[in-house]
Image (tube, rainbow, N blue to C red; front, side, top):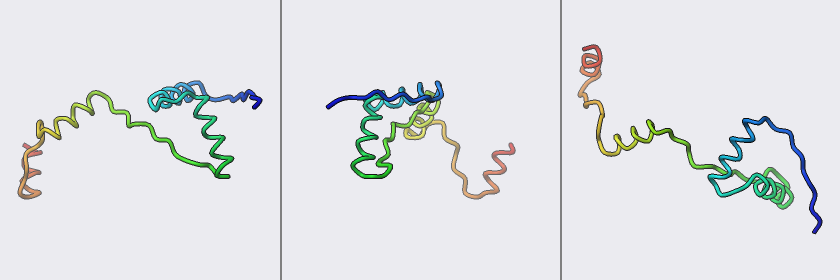
Amino acid sequence: MATANLQVRIDADLKNETEETLKSMGLSMSTAIHLFCRQVVNQRRIPFEIVAPPKYNEETLHSMDDTLEGRNLSRKFSTVDEMWDDLNA
């Protein structure tokens, strides 16, 4: 099968972010575009969604660990007034 080149203009930042995201999924830009085109032809529609793992920064990951371990959480309140009293103290 003969191949053809495809040239696309895209914002440099978007290209870099896309390549980084695709890399996290084990795909190159060329492979992702090939997959997209093949599925457009097969399904005759915009075909599918590829979702990268969420990006969390170090602070968010630490906070998530704290929450799961029950660390650094606010205390429990019996009433809203009790909570406001604590917040305003």
